[in-house]
Every structure is written in C-alpha cells, then in structure tokens.
Image 1 (cartoon, rainbow, N blue to C red):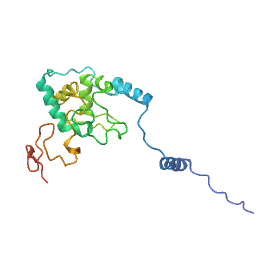
Image 2 (tube, rainbow, N blue to C red):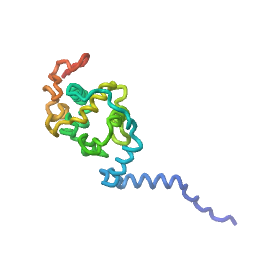
Image 3 (tube, helix red, strand yellow):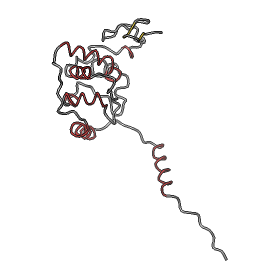
Length: 192
C-alpha cells in the first residue's frame, strides 16, 4: 500500500518575501529621526562620508562675492532651502525624511567650506540633497558657500515666488523680473 503524500514544506525565501511584504503593508512608515539617530548621522557625515574637509575657498570673503552667492543660491537652492537658507516658505521642508535642514543650524555651519562645496557638488545621500556638479560652476559653488556663511535672518527675504500663491508673477527677492512674457535669463521666458 502506498503512503499518503504530504504537502511540500514552504520555500523559506518565498516565506521571507511574503513576511516582508506583509510587514511593509501593515504599518512601516518613515518618521523623523530621533536625537540619537541625528547625532550618529551627523558624526558619520562630518567625519566619514563628506569629502573636501581640507579644501579652502579661493575666493575672497567680500560683499560682492556674498551677493553673487545669494543670487546663485536664489536660482538653484531656493526650492528646498528658501531664499534665506532657512526653509522660509518651503511647504515640504519639515515633511521630508530626513527634514530639510536650516542652513544656519550649528550642524550645517560646523562643516568646513570645502565640505559645504563637496555637498553642493555631490549631494548628500540618503537625504534629498541633489548633486549640482555640472550644473553650477566652480566659482558659483564657492560663492554659494560664502553666502551660506552670511545667511540673512529667517524670513527676511520672504517666500520663494514659486510658493507664494500667485504663480510668482512679480519680482522675486533675488531681483529677477518674473512678470509673464519677460526674460528670466538669456533664452528663457516666463510665458503663460
């Protein structure tokens, strides 16, 4: 007489995949990092993952260079950091995981000039900070670093035009005329 067949045991990798999917579907969510996580991540970034620590800014710290840095920042960095570098008017800054840092914070200001330049050029993983290498020039990046060292008071430059509710159809704090049909920069026009 033949013995009854038993069902095959479950495939362990398949069970693990289903368990992972169930765990993800039932409540895994991102939450802002706690103080211990922030301290650990900051130490790792400052001492291990961010390069450029010994690089020195070759540009003089003049009002003209800081102003040029502000204009470059207002054109590239405002979407996440606001015009003042302190997230003024950026609706999603605190909702990001990790949150967009205020660039005036001691954590950011503790980076050397070379590290700030490295972060601008290479981005910062796993945050949402994108790399600007190939988008911003060398002098432009160094000028942004100078601006970061001289940030204005929070809120003093207002909200970025992109978030002000009227579509940005007015002059921005960066001085760019954003009226419809006016030139924003060579080859670009604000058309509605």
